[in-house]
Each structure stands twice: as structure tokens, then as C-alpha cells.
Image 1 (tube, rainbow, N blue to C red):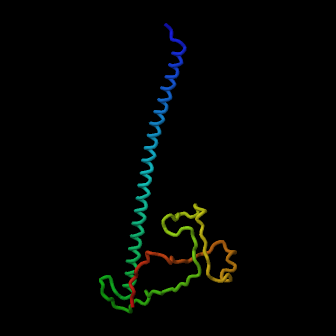
Image 2 (tube, rainbow, N blue to C red; image 1 turned 60 degrees about the horizontal axis):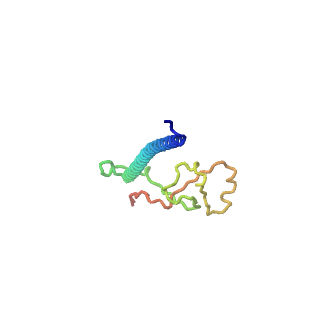
Image 3 (cartoon, rainbow, N blue to C red; image 1 turned 45 degrees about the vertical axis):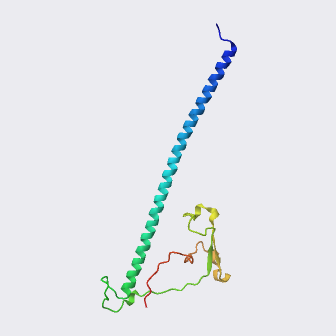
Amino acid sequence: MTPSSSHYSIAIAATAIAATTAALLTASICSSHHKKQNEKLIAKLEETRQAERTGRIRAEMKLRTHLKDQEANAIDESNGVSEGGKKSGGGGGSSQQKHNLLLHCIGTIVSPYTKRMGTPRQGALVPSGRGYIQLKIPVECVEGLESYSHAWVLFTFHANTDTPTAKKTT
């Protein structure tokens, strides 16, 4: 007894369905495997980024503490206080006097970034993040500036929330 042509068609269709099912199952397994690998990689990169940020914040805090300590020591020395906390003999440290410099605002920096979060560390890589200086002085004050390739901008942050609280001496 020989199978008829309809049996061949059914056998071919069943083989095709089995092959398609196997291919889809294999693709699903591979996709799932790649998805898990990508999720692990993303989690590891996020962990690394968080560790770097934590380290950077700790370093900034240590630097601020060190600078505050240095400033306090300089004030103590200028007042004639030695490391033991006692007044030292001598002329009161006139060579260590601090000089205050009064600055007046002559302009404002305008930037698309209003907060520290989201501000790029390398601004040249973000052309849409350009800022500019809006001057509040007469044009004559900067006449001829375009003939230079660079200009030094000295500034202070007017909205700084982390200004050191230095001891005031009288």
C-alpha cells in the first residue's frame, strides 16, 4: 500500500510546521538569553555609575572639609593662636592678613541648564547646550574684544548653596 499524494502533502505541512515551531522556539530562547545578558550588563553599568558618583561626592565633601580646616587654621594663625590653642607671642601675624575684594556684577551667564543635575561635564559634546554671557555694561567697555582669540572670565556663583561659613573675626 502506497501513500497517496494527500498524505505527502500532510507530511510536508507537518514537517514545515514542526520546523517553524522549532525555529521560533530557538529564536525565543536566544532572545530571552540576550535580554537577560543585556539586563545584567545594564545593571552592572548602573552600579558602576552609582559607585563613581558616590566616590566623587565623597571626594568633594573631603575637599570642602579640608578647605574649611585650612581656612580656620589660617584665621587662627593670623590671630596669633598656635596649634595648642594658646596665643603665641609676636606681632599678631600682620603678614597673614586677609584682603577682601568687592566685586560688582557686570553680567549674567545664560544657559539652558538651571540646576547641576543634567549639566554635561564636557559641554563641547553637547552643541545644543550652548550658553552666553549677557553683559550689563556699556558696549565701549568691550570694544576691540573680538580681535582676541580667548578671554578669561572671572566669576562667582550668585546662587551657590554651599558657601563655606567662615569664622568672622573682629
